[in-house]
Image (cartoon, rainbow, N blue to C red; front, side):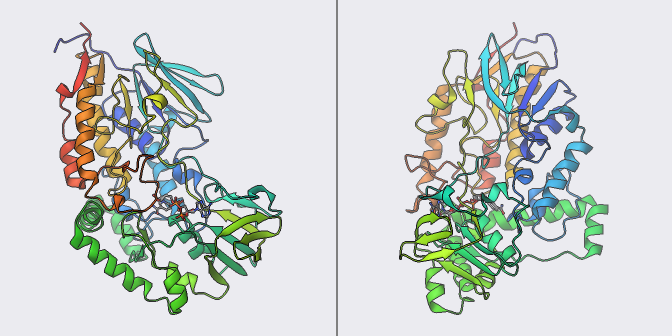
Length: 488
Ligand code: NAP
């Protein structure tokens, strides 16, 4: 390749969550200070800033969720709680000098390529130009309200789990939680002893496995803090266990899937009432939707004052929720733990290339990228946790590190002046997506359930192979997969 003039590229990172902070750290490691992170909120942390519901924790073990280069955090238990994780990412952003690069309260409205560079604009009138954009906007960002008649007619407080209203007192109140996903399960566990009546509105029973959570004694926390290698090793062990059990089960290893199913059924057996147990028994194959991990859920749902409502919601009324059997369930507070507009990468955002094509239109039939990180026709536009990332079978932090390492190979080429722009070849992107398609049929995700894991054509929106395979796929970029514009 022709060696041009060395120049530090300008980079705009969209979002200061886990992956945006990581992108900033990696650019700085490379000596690149000419970057800015544009962040919608008023602090870093993304999901861990926005979600503050009671019981919030990460169901990936803490040492598998932290950055591999910053392992020595004093996690209080095997699974970290939301506020701890938020504090961790803030700490990383500060320690690695990323925070001063963040422009807060910046809601990006458009990302447009013109005259060989990207122009990013925001709702407050900001305009920035850069050679490279790294989209790190996240995948579970926009809360989804349920389509239930009368949703806004309720007289009391009603809020989405991702926008928890902490001004609303819950002690001794009658609370209804709509949904049975990971979020609702964590909320039920947290509120079971606090409310006078707690109702979980179930449309679909979920698979719930134990997570063997343990509190960590002070000496162990101190050891982890003092000796990073111990934390690092703990992370690798936890990863190994995850990758050889759950991760394999969802992408076609039937032995592992059957083992996990046995474990979940045994876990469910602690529900004593056979009627309740039957109601909680999933009717779809394990792993088709995201598996929920909770030691406490089945205990919580059997507590006095806690009940599972399975009659189906007819509508919401001023006094509460009316179910399809005609009963009005009077409530003081309603929480909709009804999930997100998941993987909606272009929601409220125009991303347009030089030909005037918008990414939303290009992805009309489903988002497609080359190795999740780059999109044909959109040069120097990179994504973290983009389409078909292994989010259903790998830790998000691990994925981001692998993807950022791959992206940095190109950033370095640009910095060295060898390359001006990189654009995935459509043929390479197509053959990569064909390769993914071959893997889809073996996964649990296509065994016949509805879930946010599937696109509108019923195809998984995730990487269908093992994490090991993913590491191989992402090892070093094959430059022949890209159209390279040189500086010459
Ligand atoms: P979710 O898994 O999408 O679950 C949404 C729930 O709302 C489902 O039970 C759904 O019922 C229900 N629902 C939606 N519309 C409804 C309606 N009109 N009437 C009745 N019920 C309705 O959402 P989530 O629990 O917030 O979790 C989303 C994702 O966040 C998870 O899959 C996971 O990736 C992530 N998460 C992770 C953690 C963690 O610890 N790492 C914790 C929380 C969340 P149906 O099942 O019938 O559709």
